[in-house]
View 1 (cartoon, helix red, strand yellow):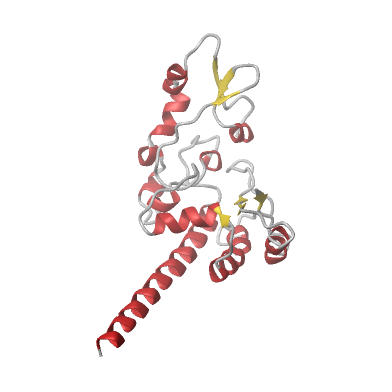
View 2 (view 1 turned 45 degrees about the horizontal axis):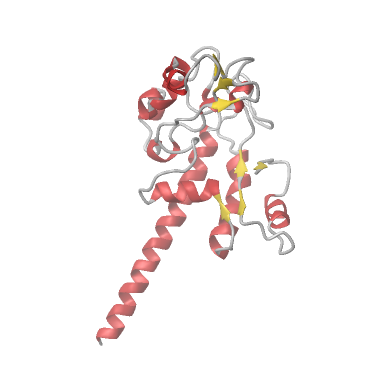
Length: 221
């Protein structure tokens, strides 16, 4: 798992991680923990800039072109959603999220990454000694993660990419004025990255279909 860093060379980073001496079966890239009150490193008030998409796209292009013997979960999840599949990660797609973290002291919490939102944000005030998992899952904080599309901001619900983006990671949507009722702080980057991957996947599918059609016709003549 690598945190995307637009100040570095993306292809150098990727190729260093996947060099033959390492041969990793899987690589993944994540966006830094950030939200509207704590913008990502390198962000400015100009929301037309997309530093994280611009860093990730060259890596995707290299990965997609070569068809390597490792996976990149971020890209694979988006590509799967583009063709109508479901995502295996909670920060993409509209599948509800059913997970609770049990700390070493027995406390039940939401994912640790929500600690970036505010101190104590993941806490449910429950533990395995006094509460059941069913009770934890019914907690309002946890229940809000099961709503999928209904939990998203109006801007997300009206977006053509909502089935793929799913509003992005919950913590990235936080802002003190509206809580989680916002688009992701990475919205411009997510749009650019998803549209790019969508185009690449659809072009490959179209090319493969045309190639198969051409082969079929040549056999018939």
